[in-house]
Every structure is written in structure tokens, then in C-alpha cells.
Image (cartoon, rainbow, N blue to C red; front, top):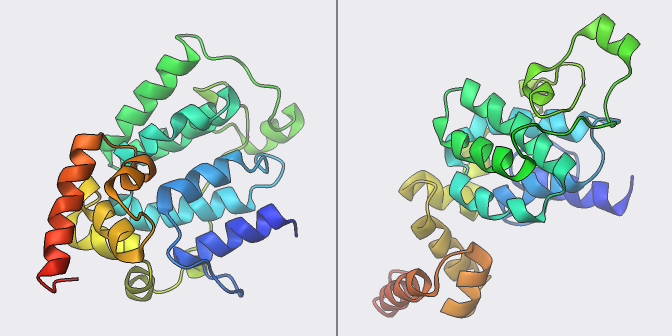
Length: 221
């Protein structure tokens, strides 16, 4: 297994995938999704993608979609197309926040998305069929479905051990919850760093940081 595989495995273990290995403490959900898309494994190797879709089906309401949108510029056209297919599946699962991701991907790829060479061969597609969600963004692959639910660790255990999920369960998947996470974990040392990490405006960052410093002074944190 490559170092990239190890890194992704450790991050997904932190988020609740049942790998028999040490996990990365408090892996960030959106960055882990982006890293999985950028890994280059799909479609030749579907394992991580199917595990990711499994995780997303369980924790969909705790994903900070707006933050994910700010991470899209790091993706290549093919990776954007993958994100478009994933977002379509999320909308079909009832989370309409992902329509914003679809619109952003369509804007970046243009009205007529390119047809990508990467995909499954025609014979395999004839046998298995074609995933319509990815086809809409120019990727011809056999249907991609979430992995078996038994590969998830218990939800309560996962949420308790990952601060991103803990704070979002309490406050919702929003900027305030993520500020508490980067503040309490020491990921950011000041408001400027927090703004860079969370892709928010300086004004929003300083306002949230000031509130959390006041809360810390009162002994809340």
C-alpha cells in the first residue's frame, strides 16, 4: 500500500471507516473527500470511492457543503467531474445543499462537459450498465454504489472521537462549529490563520475568534 493509500486510510478511519489500523486524529471531512478525489485511484480502483460514498450516506447532514465549495479550485477538470457525479448522488439522497456544488462544477466545466478517456471499457459497461450520475459529467463508468454498511464503526463512537463531527452535531455544519474545532484543537493560533484554514472573510474570522477568546476567558473552553 502506498503512502497516499495509508494517509487516506488513516483519515477515513478517523471519520468512522472500520480499518484495522491507527487513525489520524480529528481528520477534516471535506479535505478528506477532496484528497480521495485527487488520489487518482478512481476508476481503476474503486475501494476508497465506495467507502467514501458509504461514509457520506451515513454522515451527509454533517458535511459542510459551503466549505467544500471553497476547495473546488484545487481540482482538475476530471476531478471536478467526479465531484459533480458525487454531488448528484447526494441530491438524490435528499440533500439539496449539493445543488450548489453541481452549479459550481457546471460553471467551471462549461455547458458541454468534456468526455474523459478515463473510465471502464465498453464491454464491461455493456455487462454492468453505466452510472448516469457520472455520465452527466462526461465520465463513463459502471454504477458506483456505497460499500457494505458493516464497514462503518458505531456512529456514536465516531462522532465522539472526531471534533469536527462533534461540534457540527451540536451546532450544525457551519462556520461557527468549525471555528470552535480549529480553536479548541489549536489548528489555528490566531484569527488570520483561522480565516486561511476555513476559507472565510477576515471580518468573520476576527468576530468568531474574539467570541471564542472571550468564552475561553470565562472558562467555557
